[in-house]
Amino acid sequence: MQRTGRLLCLGSDQGKRREARPRGAGLRAALTAGAAALATLAAGPIAMARPANAPMDATSSPASYAAAHTPARLTAASLTGPHAGWRLKEGGSTARFRGLAAVSRTTAWAAGTGGTVLRTRDGGKHWRNISPPGVGALEFRDIEAFDARRAVVLAIGEGAASRVFRTDDAGATWTESFRNPDPRAFYDCLTFFDRRHGIALSDPVDGRYRILSTGDGGRSWRVLPSDGMPPAQQGEAAFAASGQCLVSSGSRDAWIATGGAATARVLHTADRGRTWTVTDTPLPAGDPARGIFALAVRDRGHALAVGGDYRPDQPSPHAAAVSDDAGTTWTPAAAPPKAYRSGAAWLPHSRHLALAVGPTGSDLTLDGGHTWHTFDTGSYDTVDCAPDLGCWAAGEKGRIARLEW
Image 1 (cartoon, helix red, strand yellow):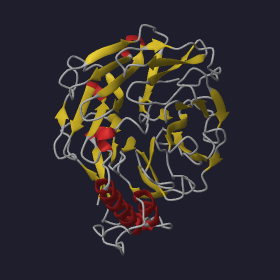
Image 2 (tube, helix red, strand yellow; image 1 turned 45 degrees about the vertical axis):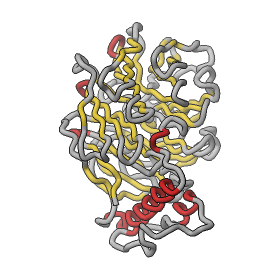
Image 3 (cartoon, helix red, strand yellow; image 1 turned 180 degrees about the vertical axis):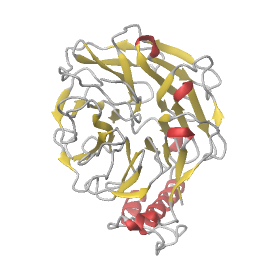
């Protein structure tokens, strides 16, 4: 499969970003503000009846309050209001950022072209270029951040171009922990189940996807046996367009999104990559430029898939689907995004809210992915949300934004 535009993906898990988990009143305040932001985003110029700083009901949990005070209905026109939406944050770089890790509303990491890694700790007001030295020829396409100081970044490409680096001191120093020795392998994606256990994905070698595994936080890696991996289709590969072609949820489950072949498929493991099952999806396929470009998993049962055809002169109808059974079966979205989308993320603590982004705009769903509504026309490649409702997006020409209200 042609590798033009290939990116590395960043998965998600619920246990790694402890910095982003405020407790008690802090979490309630974050969720209250987040619910107000989404209400305003959906309502446009109509202000939410309840002030953002109003206290929650005494009997409400943070999650139930966020769900109860987010609109259940909206129109596409209502999403263009000025009160909420993406706000660009000047990062001082022209790199294209396809790797993104949202630690919190204040802390985020971005990885992109030219071996570039940026980090902010003040909500995007200031960014530090913490790129590893001497890697300007590498393409960083995925970054997995555990907190404000520890992260693992993946460079993609054939043979030795695929590498993994880790930092434990906020980018002051980096250690190269893996360099691909096999010219047939092309690593696309990376995800962690917790702070120690993670996997990386290569395009098929000898007819099967290759899985790289770590049990020490990315400090060392080993290739897993391939006998538990189903055969790949002719021409099948992973689109690493947003850090979301490989995602995880919980301590053992992960999913792979595929494209480029006759059918767009999803592979699932329940044992950290040792064995996999596979299922077909209804997303567009049958061409090297079509398939699933991003998965978002809310929990072990509920997942979203977005994608389409990444060529700007080609339409992308029917390019979204939902699953309510851990990816075993997929249902086409009733009203999918109107164009190709490369990234997706669930809103934390919500059963129905999610975002999708792509080069032509951003969409919001309020019903778990069945219907999507465009609320922004800016270009973004990837999106990620932290547990405190800090949602970030990134893309071409150094564009990085945070969902603001």
